[in-house]
Image (tube, rainbow, N blue to C red; front, top):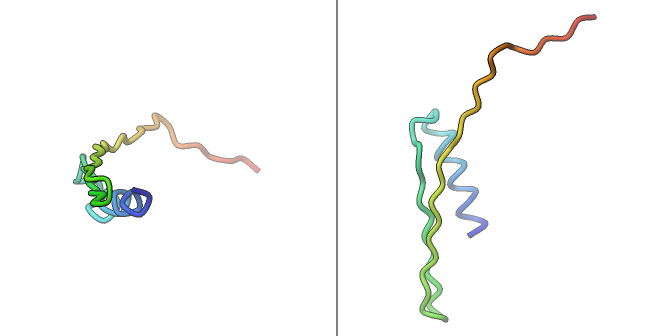
Length: 54
C-alpha cells in the first residue's frame, strides 16, 4: 500500500484540499485478500503566524 499512500497525498494536494477522504484498496490475488484503508485529511489551523525578529 506504500505506492497507494503516495497517491492519497497527491489527491489531497491536487484537489486544493477539496478531497477530504480517500479510500485505498489493494487486492492480493495470491492470498485472495482485499486490504482497505480509509484516510481523512486533518488541516491544522494556526491562530497566529510565526515570524522571526532579527
